[in-house]
Image 1 (cartoon, one colour):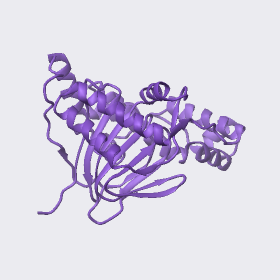
Image 2: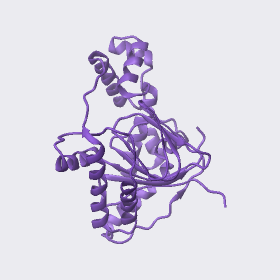
Image 3: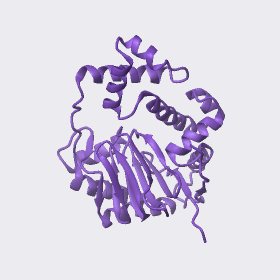
Length: 299
């Protein structure tokens, strides 16, 4: 039987600072994007190919990938049969709290390596998913912290200082703030550069150096991040598309599915189920829900 792509991106009410993704992707490719928190994934089949500023990493079964917040990256299949994995997306504050408990690191923590061969850590990551799916809050929380602590002890440290030229970094940060404030009607690159008192190419170089991607790619990523928050709050996808500056819902659907890995409707349904379970007081019961089958999205 031919394998199909499948993905479930969800949350468990008893783990409020973590998102979970279990998926098998074959043709799907994640465009350049970032995360507010960390990405910690265990590869269970095939090969994932991740491109980062430091180069390309290929991760197979038993491998664990660790991506720090705000690091631009892409991901795609490294072999024709694709890859399967279980992913944790812990919030930055949660990882910082764990690092402070087990080490001398205070503030933001940083994974020095992106990839490690660690079968035990991979098993812990998968165990978090199993416990959450069964509604075992104590086990899910315990194993989650064990997994993060293990990886921090072996690969973690203090967040390194930025090395970008101070003036360029400040210009890029101001450009980012303007784009975020005017997300629904952003300026052109030329207009933005003029407003900041610099040239278009100087701004483009500074923005790439600081955020790992050009302003238009960063804006698409930021729109999807904001759309996620709106969908989590119960906003309909069509309304979310308008609020974040996409031309229509299909435009949101295309970018959201490419960056998040599931369509916005499936993402919203999972969040609605989590809210309903919370309201009904059934967090301790097994969480049921079939993975969302997803078809290939047109780029």
